[in-house]
Image (cartoon, rainbow, N blue to C red; front, side):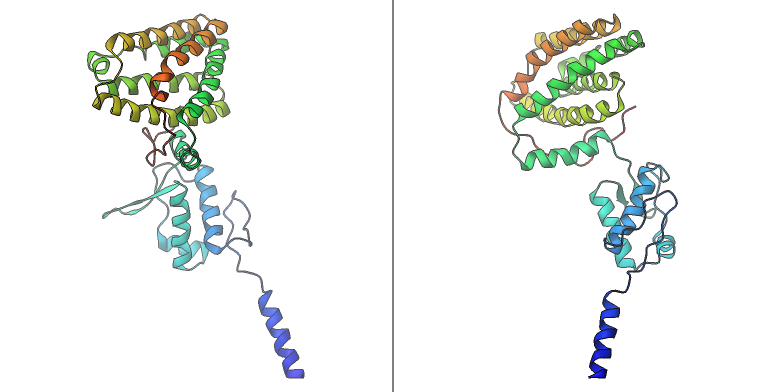
Length: 285
């Protein structure tokens, strides 16, 4: 009996023994013992990336260095790498200079994950367009209200001068036009709105480029006259912002979106997930 009781006591003591704590990185979150070792290591490395301690494009320390720092097994460390890679925060560099390269989040990387969600829920393109069309006039209004509205308007106008090649190439023209809308979101000057509306713009731009390729292949891309109307609409919006006329900026933006959006949504269909990294893959300024 005494031997059995002792065994039970020893077993109970073993089952509640604390998990080995992952060393805390300065400035990062405290270790989370409810997570697996790999998840806890990933959380520490994630904090370094998001806090800017590991810069975009830099390499993570070598596997040997991290094994020594965290005092974890190689499988746990590699699982932490896989977690970060799934989140789009690192990528594997192949070849002689191989390693794990740091990727800071961008509008496009966030749009990738939002696109997965909308795709899985079979959200219609028209639904995405409606959300985007609600936010973009607000961005135009805020841009026109800013003290720097003159320089903002002129910068936007500089995006409205396609060369002959861009004007004649439907896909190139669409890419040029989407840049105007992306910069209009940035022009609002609100960082949170830039992120939220920017994600929608990145996702919409990818859908629009896909539409443009199909329309060009099928000979159904809008004629040159309509392309020039798009340029003129962008110029009018730019001038309203330059003049600080926020009411006119909203009116013109809404009217332009109402006229242009049906070309993409008229074919129906749903939002499709975009390629990993999106079209640009670089942060907005």
